[in-house]
Image 1 (cartoon, rainbow, N blue to C red):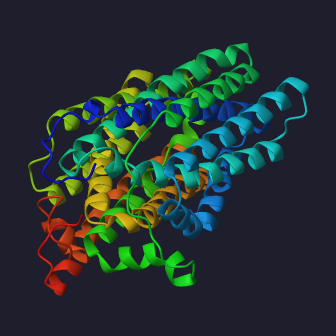
Image 2 (image 1 turned 90 degrees about the vertical axis):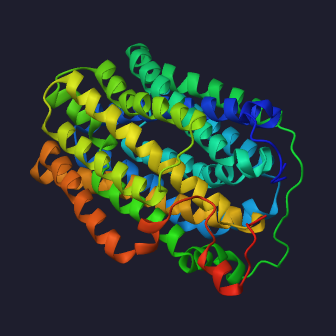
Length: 422
């Protein structure tokens, strides 16, 4: 399905992408329910913002350690099988949480271990999810399919926290049990995907092949600038770990308020991702990227200063809308500038950068919140986004000048190859 001459039809006219999209919704729905329940349960057990930040570390460590292997596996083996194993493994982790809650032996250490296992599964799942898209639709449809992929994430981000927050009143075990069921349903949709074979990396496993994704990213200044900019901006502005603190101590709500805060960014992101799916970006994407990340930083600042639930949700919705534009640009650039046999490894590097920003950012927020308070910690991060944007204009002028997804990479220009990647 990589014929570049194929008409730009809707991504949903391809059955494989439709099955993939539904499976992704159910998977992210399960994860978001799990995160809400774990966050509230851990905060009830410990009352510590630092302990909430450690949840990010527990997810980041396996991602950091597994990234070279993840890309190698994604480039060599059936992507469907990888996704099935990951989702069933995550379902098993949720089942352990449910059992531990019902039996009364679940403690903070066990929660950290289980969330680390989920992080290991997601370390394989997320890069594979991204790298599989060009195999499901023709090249002209990839930007639109990427936007729809982002929308599937946001549907789960919107609905999952609300369900998790509401059902938490019946006990966290109920939330974990439903997450198990949803992950199994998601795996069944992945099983139904039928797609054409794609080129696979054939060189033997070696240190060079394992690190090939890092080498490719380092050579392409546009990709390196894009993913490092996103990493630094989100690292400074990561706030989800502190949602329980804002919900209970600042906005004075309960688990339902936590669910609404977690859902709010997804609402803005979903609306924007649907817009992008129907109306792909035509403005210079480099300048758009810097603009939306500036909007992202401003929304974080507003959230940090808010003491009203509605204003906080509105700021988070704007943040989510801005972030999804950044995500679509980043994913499309990575996929369209990378050869098929390298997409798994490059996507794994992209996933590691994303994991660094999300998980270490949550740890930073937790540490700072424990020292100076949640609101000041978030405010400092929002201001820091603008510092990073100014620095990246200077460090990566190629990214600032990038106009379209299909511009030739530096490697192609130097080699004299004027064709687009396959």
